[in-house]
Length: 242
Ligand code: GLN
Image (spheres, rainbow, N blue to C red):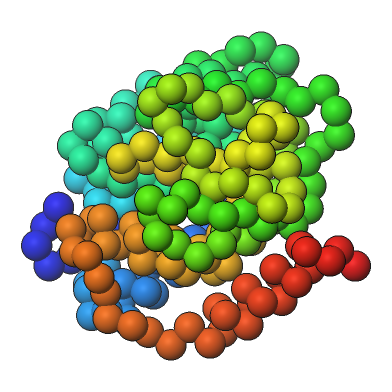
């Protein structure tokens, strides 16, 4: 990572950017700039190589077919795996989360290899799609307030021994396994089912990624009143659905 600026990479906006997930890039960028950290944001379309020199990579959700195409291209490209080997941070949402695991079930009903960056395997849920507002307590190790988000997925994600659940559910289906977990993380790679976009609902996650990238323990405070209002509204909706 360069000393003074943050290289933010938004992976495959043409294939993976449902439910406003591009907002995640906007929020990370904005919160870095508010701390006077210069940001270079690169949006990498799926017909381009993924740069290996980024500090933070964001990857969003997608429909089943674009998800398969994205997995094929990311495997062939290899850039995201090389970036993680170099210490990069990755934050992934829904289809992106499934792609980072070892395997998921693709749109043809067949097992599709993922990138193996998270020790998770995704299958297809037999029951209803998981849809709705979610509220969950983030792993205390990360020191963050509750996670709020919106989920819409058929996939179910099983965690392996070298990954930890990102959060424990209060409301919603999360990983969908019925074990009360939502998302997964290891040292530098994070996955969640939360759209919203998740960074707009949980700006402290954006701050966590920035802190990890800059290798600092704290960032100067910024005015969070709009985020707080959105959080309060969505948490109330999750706890007491209309
Ligand atoms: N296609 C995947 C699923 O349904 C991911 C959906 C999404 O990214 N919203 O599980």
